[in-house]
Structures are given as C-alpha cells and as structure tokens.
Image 1 (cartoon, rainbow, N blue to C red):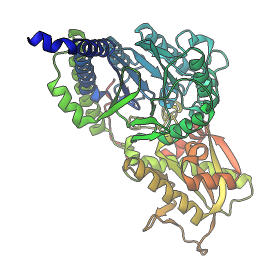
Image 2: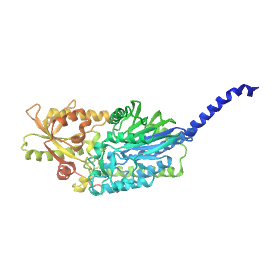
Image 3: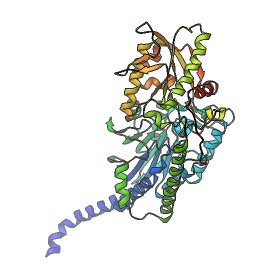
Image 4: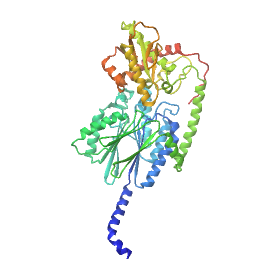
Length: 532
C-alpha cells in the first residue's frame, strides 16, 4: 500500500537525489587569501592551523570540493625571522602546498627587501626557484619576466568543475615595481618591464573568453580603492563582449580590511600580518560568501583544530621554538644597545631620534644644494616618512660605515627639494599624519630638528623668523616625492611645484648620514650583538 502511494513520487525523488549527488560530487570552491605578511612569522602557528582546519572542515562538507590558496604579495621582508633563503617563509608555503594549490604574486616588499644591492636579484631568483621546486605557482599578468626566471612563472591557473573552468590570474603593483632594481639589472633582470595594468587585465579577460573560461578571478597587490576602479574600467571594456564573469577580486598593499561590491563583483581586502579571508564559490563559480579571520578568531579556530598531518605539526612545533629563541635573542640585543634604539616600526610610534637623524641627513643635502642654487638665505626643512625606511634592527653602536648605511634600505628613487612656504609644508605634514592615522592608527612623519610641532598639527621653525609664513626649501624623501599622490594635498602639491633639485636616496644617505648620526647620537655603552 505504502509503495503504491509513493510510486508516483519516485521519479521526482530520484531526480532530487541525483541533483544532491551531483552537487556533492562537484562541490564548491574555497579560496583562502592573505597578503602583506611582511615576515611576521611569529603568527605562523595559529595561521597554519587555521588554514588547515578551514580546509579540513570545507572538505568534510564538500568531499569533491576544491580549495586554492592565494598569497597576494609582500610575503617576505627584512626581519629577525627571515634569512637569505627565506627558510621559514618558504617552508610554510611548502606545507600549505600540501593542503591545496598555492598561487603567489610578488609585492613591492618582496622586490625591494631583496633588491637594494647587486646580490639582491640573486636572492630573488633563488627564492623563486625554491617556490617553483615546492610546487608554488608564481603568477604576474602585468609583468614581463626576464629570461632568468620566466620558466619559474605561469600566466594563470585553472580549476575545472561540472564542465566549467575557473581561471585565476594575478597582477603586481605597477608603480612600485618600476623603481625597483628588479628592472634595473642590465644582465639578469627579474622583470624586463611592467605592462600597463588595465591593458594587461583586458588581455587576461580576452584570452579567458577565447579559451571558453566560465569565471575569472584576479588578485592584485594594490589597494582596494585602486582595484575597485580597475574592476569598473574592466566592466566598461566588457560591455557588449561575451566572456567570463568576474565573481570576486582580491586587493592588498593598503593593510586595510574591506568588503564591498562593484558592478556585481565582490572586492575583498584581508588586511595584513597573516590575517586571512576565505571566499566560497558555488558549483558554478558564483560568489556565495566571504569570512574574515583576524588573530583572535584564528586563535579560536586553532584551538579546536584537529591534529594536522605529522609533517605540518612538526613544522609548527619547530616554528614555535625558533620564534621563542629569536624573540629572546632580539630582546637581549635591544636591552643592551644604546644610541639609536629605534628601527622601522618604532618610527610609527611618534617622533623618534632615528627619524630626526634621517630627516637631518636630507636637510644636510638640502643646505648644500641651497648654496649651489644661490638660495642659502632660505631655511631648509625636511620631512621623512616611515615608509621610506626598511630596517628591522636598531642601528649598531660606533661610527656608521657605508655598509651600515646600505642596511637602511631606503625607498628606491630620488629625494627632491621644493621651494614653498612653511604653511604649505604644514598642510602636507598635517594631511600625512591624518592619512596614516586613518590607515593604521600610526604616526608617521619624521621631521628635521629645526622643525617643531605646535598644537593642532602645526609646524614652527625652531629659530625665530620675523615672517609669519616664511618661504622655505622643503626636502621630501623618495617615497613622498614619488608616491605622495595617494594623499590629496601631496598630489596637488607635486602637480603644481616642480622640484628644484633631486638626488638618489641611497647615495644621499651614504654621503650625509654618517656625520649627522655622529653629531646626534647620544653616548653609547658597550653592546653585545647576538648573531642571528
């Protein structure tokens, strides 16, 4: 009787069951993305357990599902955790590769932190070769790679499910790469040239259309505002053309958390320092949902993580031991070192002696140029941004050598001098502070010692000047001179004020920093440096 009642429903039930089986068989796609790790490897243990647990839980629900991991630039950096071979960082990517395919795009720190001298390109090539050896895919659609590394890179990465293809492409940070030694090595350049990013992205989309790709995802080491504009311009290009849809794109570089839609495309920016995002696409590669994992949430996930594979667990234990040892050694150095105890990150905590010394080096050059230009009567003031300095260790005791100065790793490019007024310099100073505070709550401008800060973000010349708004010669470091466009007032200033002098940042420090540091350094006691 019951079978006779159910008989008319059997076809529908069978179709439903088959649909569920197909959905389960083809599953969904999990995309794990992170950027701007900057060698903050003390966060690796929780991060690795979180990624492993997230992928394990996803596959438990989607036995035939696919996962992929995107490393969106600035993975490496000069720090106590990194050696020349990038052992800890590359080892971590090797273990992630056992969880899922790993796709990698180079960021500006991956370039600059290893390319400040002739040997830098050799180190980059060794890192890329090691990544290739462990199965990490290095992408870069807007980079024309040099012959020495082209065989280590790929144009894109494809996933297939249910007869459809998802293509993933990556883009580098165009305006930072062009100033790197990566493109200046005449013998073995890492990158021959950077392509126009919009044109490169259009070519990626066109090729995907020709290849019958269903969906295209790209990740770029650039800020979410810039990536969103790129999506809008690509949308204009796509009008009236048949081709893949664009379910999600990933941004980086700005160290911000962002989630929003542009023309139906989800834009995701997962901040920095091993924060991560997971994005789930359905069986047709359409966007379903996104989740963000900061450090506190990662601790929760890591605490409940089931035991991972033995190799990964051993690596995590080794990492934890190495981190504790390195932190202890770093603490010993910092506790015993006098003089300039500041380093890169402390410049963001407020005005620092090291920052003043760096700005004073710029002023010393500016005063020499002022005499040459017949403008010695004008006071020279200097502004130094923390982003122009990439040394993660304090300055050692004793007289500076050229080798020490090269270890400052200044931003590639030229320091520039402009003629302006003190009030205009004050506006730049105030806007730079506001911009950085809005970015990450940090203080960033470092000033020459003849500039004082008054109330309400004002500037004053320490030596009295009869004029209320005197004309000054303003020296800006290489980062501010070339990349201040991100800040509205700097953009307007640079467009309306041609520089009256310029000088390579590294050469300037080599020529002027030693005597400035000798003059400003407080008495130094003996120091025991720990070899790392």
